[in-house]
Image (cartoon, rainbow, N blue to C red; front, side):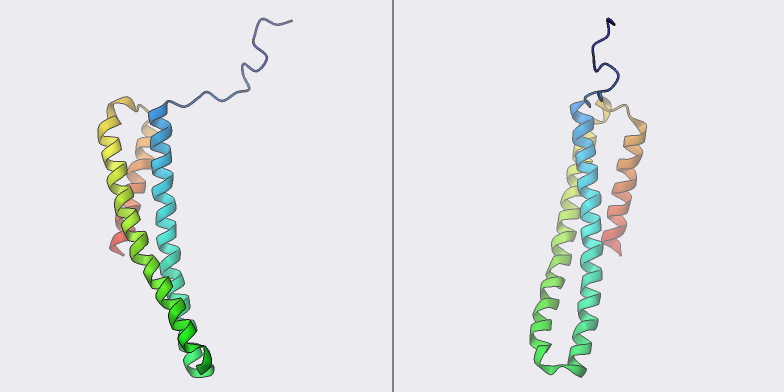
Length: 122
């Protein structure tokens, strides 16, 4: 028998807690950016559908207007979540920057923050 533990080379090393937290914050912000993009696309789709109903199916117009209003409400909600995520991620990185040595992770964080700013400005 070998002196090595049974699973020595097969287990993933536990991440440093601050790196794990930073990864979670980055991924959360990236997911929220996708939510905003989807909400904007849904508003476009529902607007087109409303126009179609106005010409073809008058009975469904009021129902479709309600659907469109709900879709429109999601855009500012997603924008607020992105602003909150930007602040949370920036504050966390400012506090923990010295404890994080992974440059690739820092680059990913900066790219995600840039994407978030662009999503808000579009």
